[in-house]
Image (tube, rainbow, N blue to C red):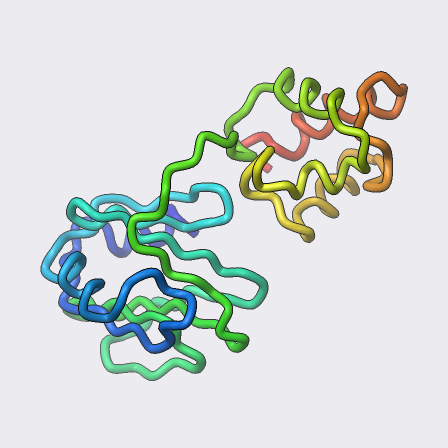
Length: 191
């Protein structure tokens, strides 16, 4: 998604921002406009479970939660369940969510937690050796590895051929067997 949006939006100037639902936002509509309007989108990338937009000197994060969507439509088109709208000269980007749970965050804090796509197999093995809970709980913990939710965790275990209920400690045969397939087959950028 980040690559697709980058092709469409990088180097385009934002005309304005409309915050339709403010209950989870950390900034007001006026604050978002003051910081983002009349600035170019510099880059778009994934950071953990968030899609991040570098706009001028600011950073805007979108966390989609369970039912959130990002919609890029022609300017003036209506969309259902808008949370945030970013207007460009010929198109508009919407963060939408029928449950109103998706979260826009202005200047989200940087995290030192490893992203699911950027860590070495030794890191996972070390983390699993220290935990005494099931491996699925460990992988979904955003304080250990960012970017893996329930659905991705289930896919990872299916493709690695292990039970998500396996204990995470690597001193078991199951634990040793799981770390290489998990990293090789599920965290590689090509998968």
